Amino acid sequence: MLESVEVGAVIPAAGSGKRMNVSVNKIMLPLLGRSVLEHTLEVFLASDLIKILVLVVKTDEKDGVYHQIRGIDNKYGKKIVFVDGGAERQESVVNGLEYLRRWTGWKVRKRLVVIHDAARPLLTKELLRQSLMAGLDYGAVGIGVPLKDTIKQVDSEGIVVATPDRSKFWGIKTPQIFDLDLLLECYQKVNESGLLFTDDCGVVEYCGHPVKLIPGSYENLKITTPEDLILAEAILRRRENADRPGI
Image (cartoon, rainbow, N blue to C red; front, top):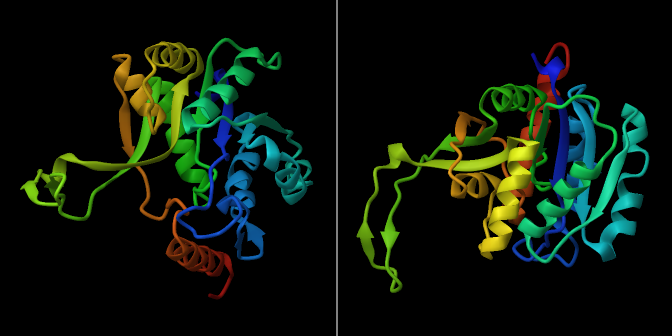
């Protein structure tokens, strides 16, 4: 079924390392001998479903990122396109989408776009394929996991005012998959409104289009704090050991 559609990927990578307490973009930090970004890109480059990969980076970091990942695309016979990022994630995503809109390499009318955080290096090829299949069916799909912790709503003084039913809440991750034309149309409406959103599903929800959530993986974490790097390394080591015969 996925043979009837072409897929472009947009990877926003114009963030910072503030909560990591580092002076460089956190995607450049080492993770088992390679950068976080290299781990993230590889699952998309290795997928035969991804037609084009757009990496959105800060203008002043473009050269550094290019040299960091130089050659990784040739390994898989695919080209990574660099696009300038914006001041906000939303602007960066729009810049990536606009490149896909103008791209002349599309061969079919049905096009999907997958948006994935550059700082999520533990996405698996199985979850990527599942999300794309759902995207083809629904046109707007998010990956999420049921919350494990009890949720407390507090006021400005930190006093608890409510305890929502945890079973009704999911933590949202990426990838998020959309019909390309739908997401472009929704971002145009949002930009005209002046509103800012922290994820792309929220943009589509605002425009009144239903979003399907499918179960993801708790391992698909986002590198945000130093502890996340430690956990990500442990997960990658376990996966490597599981792939070795006799272990």
